[in-house]
Image 1: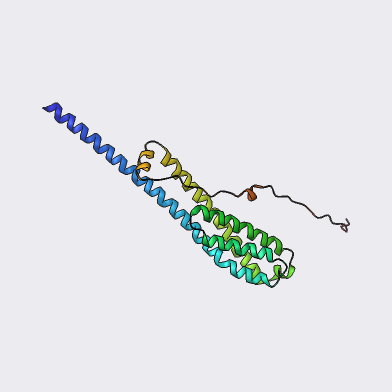
Image 2: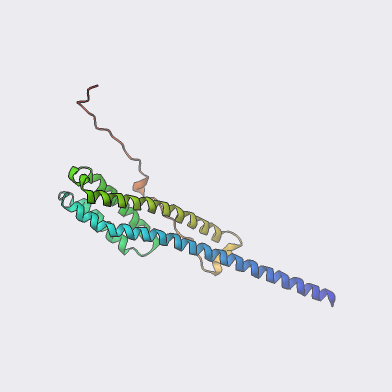
Length: 195
């Protein structure tokens, strides 16, 4: 009778230990999922702030760049795509399109000295550039959180708890093929530069 009590107590302690460990794993995975969601929400707030600045930028630039309608159209279409994107993956792609369109706009703006001297344009350009830097920082945090999350839900024993919770791997923010290309730097030859 004494050994059956000890066996029952050992089994109870083992079951309680497994249950406590499972709860700890579950809570850890919930925390990671929530950190992913928070990291994405931080990016989304910055994307919204950037989207709010785009109409002001386009209006400021319109008067100066009448012959650059294609550039303005690209920015407007990228903004529309960003605003209508629903999933994280769609927003990531739309964000890359927006960044590319803005780079194109700022590059074309270099050809317009009066625009470059416009105080409103300079403020908007600086504001958007600041937002771009902050978005890039947040992307890095997001990717770190997603990497930790994806690693944890793929490891044993978390994989069993993750399966029970129906957790799936999440996608990271990825760089577009256009951003991977090498940038060609050319210097205009100055003919009248005497020493």
